[in-house]
Every structure is written in structure tokens, then in C-alpha cells.
Image 1 (cartoon, helix red, strand yellow):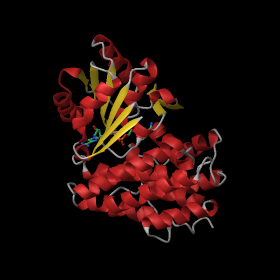
Image 2: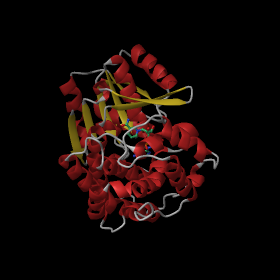
Image 3: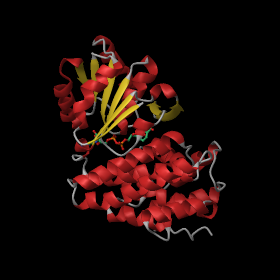
Image 4: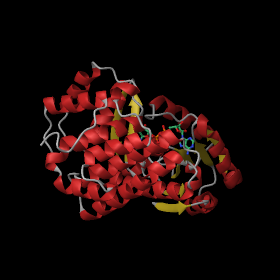
Amino acid sequence: MRVVFGFGTLAQLPDEADHLGVSRILVLTTPQQLEHGEQLRSILGTRVVGIYQGAMMHTPVAVTDDAMRVAGELKADCVLSVGGGSTTGLGKAIAYRTGLPQICVPTTYAGSEMTSILGQTEDGIKTTLRDPRVLPESVVYDVELTMSLPQSLSGTSGINALAHAVEALYAKNANPVLSLFAEEGMASLAKALPVIHHDAHNKVARYQALYGAWLCAICLGSGEVALHHKLCHVLGGSFDLPHAETHTIILPHVVAYNAPAIGNALQVIGRALACEDAAAALFDLAKSIGAKTALSDIGMPQDGIEKATEIALKNPYFNPRPLTREGICSLLTDAFHGRRPSVEDHR
Ligand code: NAD
């Protein structure tokens, strides 16, 4: 994978296309970011054969089918996704099926561009696979494109990135280099997000946030996930909850739940966030950027707690602290009501 990072890096897109030897690029985006798609067309000129603006959250298979049809009709030899995790997901799904090379221009902090993970939805069921074929050949991070990311999504998307770093610290395959990336990524985001909340156009903070998100994305790409990502997957898939906001609400509660088993990780989070109590600090960070802190505020039904507990316990997976029905149910109940957690809760 080649990575370009900085301000104004879109200007290097023609070089990236030349490096890949492609000349019939299909740009992927959402209706909300059509302007970004057009900006790329103006930079790449006749190398762009079309813009597909149908990307949607959770990569519905029907959308991938439709985009594949358009790519086929246009004889595209490359897909270029410009957008957040939803658009990146569409590019990955097409690459997985066709082997077409991908260029990715991420515009949120979700981090999908650095992972071989592809989540797809069909008939209301979301499944996830890991395959190296979905990794983009080229990633171009241009801080300028993140300036238009709405303040609310900037904050929750940034905490979504933080969650990748947190889980890498206690992953089954954790290692000291990933922990370094995680600490630096978390520290950079924790500094930048409150600034962005007050001043969305602050260039230094936007740079720090995208830099931190890149580091956290590498953590997700290399580290295995545990309770936090599994729970968010269950909640997003079962109740159609918004991705970044769900991560923001759940993360402090998972850190509190795992606290008795993750002493070293708590120290690293403590250094990165300059705090004593990692769970409370993550909750306070969410509050400070104006994010919602209760599942009840983002569309979760109260009787969903039972159902989510069932699904979360169905297929066993690694977590540093063993999962119990009572523990998961009380974690979700706290998150449902937006209670401020503490690392002392489960000691
Ligand atoms: P998103 O991609 O759904 O974007 C949300 C909205 O914000 C969209 O309308 C988008 O067009 C708009 N937007 C994005 N960037 C913008 C910008 N700079 N300016 C203006 N508008 C902008 O949101 P997301 O949180 O980035 O992605 C969520 C999806 O990504 C979920 O489906 C999730 O499962 C997936 N994801 C996958 C991975 C992975 O490794 N496979 C990792 C993280 C997230």
C-alpha cells in the first residue's frame, strides 16, 4: 500500500493513477459528497470515466451489485472512493469481487482504508470478512477534505478511531509497536477533537485528528478486536444504530467492564488522555464534544438490551475479561441510560 498524507495531496492523484497504470477510473461517493467527487474529476481529467454516488452505510450488497454494473458498462479499470467508511466499504466490496485496483481518499476518521476488513449487509444481516484483496493499493489523505466534515460527526468519528487504538492495546495479538501507534493516535485525537468541536476549520487540529486517525486505523488493521467492536457490530446490525455514535457511547463502558483485566492498557490510555480514570475520561471526552452518551438517545429500544446481550454471547470470541450474561446486560443497561462509568465499577 502507498500512502500520501498532508494538505493539498489530492494534486498527487494523477501520479498515483500513473503508478497503478490505470486510465479508466470510476469515482465512488455519496450524494452528500458529490462535490468532492467532482473535485477529483477536475484533478484527474479524462482518466475519470464516471462518478457513482450511491454509497450507503453498511455496504448493502444490492448497492455493490449496482455499482458493479456501472463499472462494467464504463469498462472501469480502477475504483477511487472518496468519503467515509461507507464509501470505502463500497470500493472494497468491488475490489473483492473484481480484483480492480483501489485508490482511497478518506474523509472521516473511521479508518477502514487501512484494514483488510469488509462488512456487508444483505437481507438485514451484516457479515464481516477479512481478506487482503480488499486493501486499497493507494491511500491519499488530504486534510483539506476533512474541513467540511460536520462537527458532530468529526467528534464521534474521532472516538470511533480511538476505539480501534483502545482494543489494540489488549488484543490477543497485541504488541509493543501497535501500542506505540495506539498511544500516539489516542493522544493526538484527544487533543484535536475538543478544538474541532469549537472551531471546525482549525487546520492544526484537523491535521492532528487525521494523523491520529491514520495511526488508529493501522491498529484496527493489525490488531484483533474484542468486546467493544463485537458489541458495536451487534448493536449496529440489530437496531440500525449510527456507526460512529454507537462506538462513542459504548467505548467508556467496555473500558470499565474490562478494567480489572487490562491494567497495562489503562496506564497507556491514562498517559494518552492525561487522566486517572480511563472509562470516565472517555465518557467526559464524548460529553465535551457534544456527543450523545445514551443508547436511548440514538434509537435503541429498551427491550433491545436483552436481545443484544443474547447475540453478543452467542458466538464466543476473545476478550481480556470473560463475558458473563449479567456483566454484558449491566454494561448495556448503563450505556442505554447514559450513566458515567468508572474503572472502579467492576473491581
Ligand atoms: P459514513 O461514511 O457513513 O459517512 C457519513 C456521512 O458523512 C455520509 O453522508 C458522508 O458522505 C458524509 N461525509 C463523510 N466525510 C465528509 C466530509 N469530509 N465532508 C462532508 N460530508 C462528509 O461514516 P463513517 O463513520 O466514516 O463510516 C461508517 C461505515 O464504515 C460503517 O458502515 C462501518 O461499518 C464502516 N467501517 C468499516 C471499517 C472497516 O475496517 N471495514 C472501519 C470503520 C468503519
